[in-house]
Amino acid sequence: MMSTINQITVIGSGVMGHGIAQISAMAGYEVVIRDIQQSFLDKAMEKINWSVNKLAEKKKINQTEAEKIISRIHPIVDIQQSLKNSELIIEAVPEDLRLKHKVYQELDKYADKDVIFGSNTSTLPISEISSFTSRPNRFIGLHFFNPPQLMKLVEVIPGDKTDKQITDLVINFVSKIGKIPILCKKDVPGFIVNRIFIPLVHEAMYSLDRSKSSLVEVDSASKYKMALPMGIFELADYTGLDVIHKATNEMYSRDKKVVFPHPKIQELFENKELGQKTGKGFYLYQGDNYERIQLTEELAEKFDPISLVSVAVNNASWLLSNEVCDKNELEQALMLGMGLKRELFETAEIFGINNIIDTLQYLSSKFGTFYEPDKYLLSMKK
Ligand code: NAD
Image (cartoon, rainbow, N blue to C red):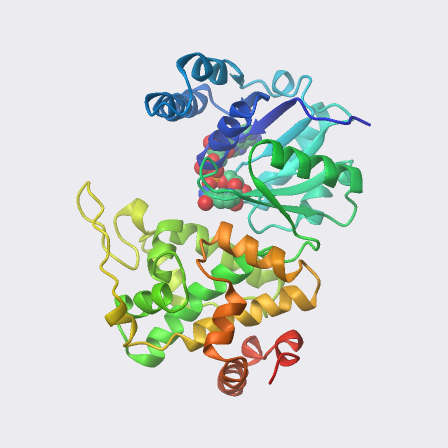
């Protein structure tokens, strides 16, 4: 059994893969980055070069260091060669179970027997993906956030069969690359952060329908009253409606209680209104310079986000009563992964636990089981 990790292979050089390769090389690891076409790897290396040179320009690192970082990253198309001497494989291919199946069969065939498999999946079940390999005991979820160069959080998710030593080794690796690992003790749909974030986007749409408020009013309230880093619709546009749509479907197909899908998300996805990246989502983004939407405390006063707070707190309570993480881990994950500026349960206290329970009971009587308050929340009743 290996005791440390020195060399890693990142499979997939897209949005996530190239960022993960970069931060790993910056932490001193030798990194192979693999994709299916040389041109994809060239593009990824261009982006990495740009980003590392930017750090040198800003004097965060010196020129020699910048060159060393780049020299530690080896772009390779040939799968067999890309896995040579690798101790940890981080897979970041598109979120499609069939594709992941194919990729893991191939990796299983060529990888060393001691290698660790880490999947960057956002929503697919780790135990299910691990069964695509002959060694589910060496398989783990390693969920980075976008962009990995900046986001500090990595959710670490063992599957049913993951060895404890593998979990420990991976947690150690995450710390060494300067990230904060949060252990998601159970392989549940959405893990920790997406279990709160994704349903919140849908609830924001429902509350918009019910209240006749405007997008900016809901967004102002989510920013100023719920302590989100920006409006919830802004955050959805920033994340990408394709990502949200995909995550919704994956989560909903496994557990009807985790999210209450609003048809607007599907509609935006089908219209290719994916948010900032396409110039239109909930908002319109025109011109080269992204003009920030004006959210104000005054506008926040026009909307009561109680149902948003209630849904977020209810899903958080579910995580706690199912022992997926403890309260500190939950709050830390939400601060680092969603940018919450105040603890969620502190917000819950401000809005009132009893008020939240009443809201959920009222909504569940009208709209069904999704809103039923969790037992952890009920136990907090005053
Ligand atoms: P992406 O589409 O930007 O990149 C995927 C890359 O994988 C592409 O370059 C593609 O050519 C490559 N690829 C496809 N098949 C391959 C193979 N057999 N071998 C090697 N490379 C192959 O996708 P992404 O946004 O980087 O997402 C990757 C994973 O990370 C997904 O599981 C996704 O759910 C997860 N994730 C994404 C985000 C996000 O916001 N984008 C955040 C967290 C996690």
